[in-house]
Image (tube, rainbow, N blue to C red; front, side, top):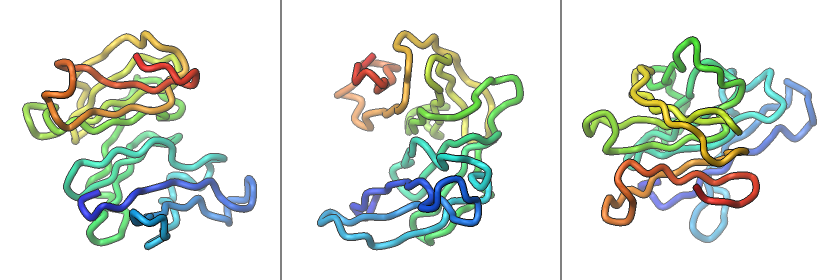
Length: 169
């Protein structure tokens, strides 16, 4: 993030017990845990909690899970911020959002999020949850996604996807 921290999601410690929350940890460059927060209530029924994370480059960390929305964590204030959650449009069949990437240049420079799940198509949403684009999945078992913030280092409109087989599409 903007302070040089790494963010990690962790499955609850007591397996399948909703009273034991899934956690989000902030880790500094030396590997020290510098903050921890229970994941939001949207993950309570989940066996796994939050999946992929995407940072907007300034303040918000977005996260996908088994929910009808992408949750947002304010890294400056250390709180989950429902006002920045992004609804996933009805009709998109994402049982779990395993791949999530923030594109600062998306939606005309206002920022957008790409989501995908295993063999699903990849879709781009604006930060209000409106569908912008659909892209066919050419690599099954997609588990993570990322955009390089430096346009000189990426192909135009290329989304880097890491698959379970460690392949890059």
